Image 1 (cartoon, one colour):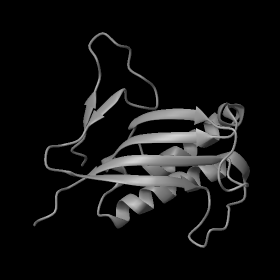
Image 2 (cartoon, rainbow, N blue to C red):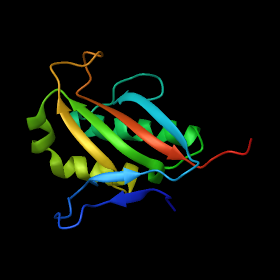
Image 3 (cartoon, helix red, strand yellow):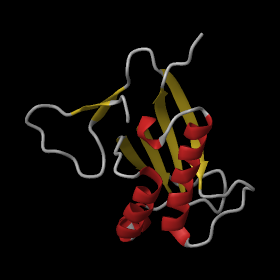
Image 4 (cartoon, rainbow, N blue to C red):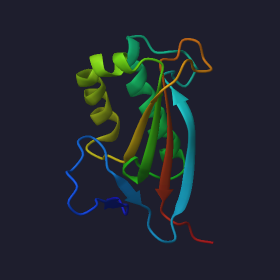
Length: 138
C-alpha cells in the first residue's frame, strides 16, 4: 500500500490517467530514476513500435524502483518524453493497456513532452521518474 498522498485542489475536475499532485511521506527516501527507454536488460530495443517501447520503458522504471526497495505505487511522478505526440495519441488504447500492466491502477503526477530526438536513435519514448521509498533503518 502506497504512503503517497494524492493532492487534488478543491473544485477541480478529477484528471483521467494521472494525478495533479503527489506528496511523499515524511521520512521517506526519494529516488530519482534516470530516463528509461524501451530496451530490455541487454539493451536491445523491443519490437512492436511505440506502444511496446512505452510499456518496456515503464517496466524499466518500475524495475529500477524495485531494485531500490520500492514498488510501482511508490512512484510519485513521471516525465514522459516522446518523439511524436501523434504516435502516443494514435496508440493511446495500447499505451493504456501497457501502462496498467506495468503500473496497475496507480496514477502519479505526469507530464508528456514532445522532443525532436532522444539519445538512442531507435528510441521513440523515454520515461523519467521520482519515487518516495520507505525509510531504511540507520
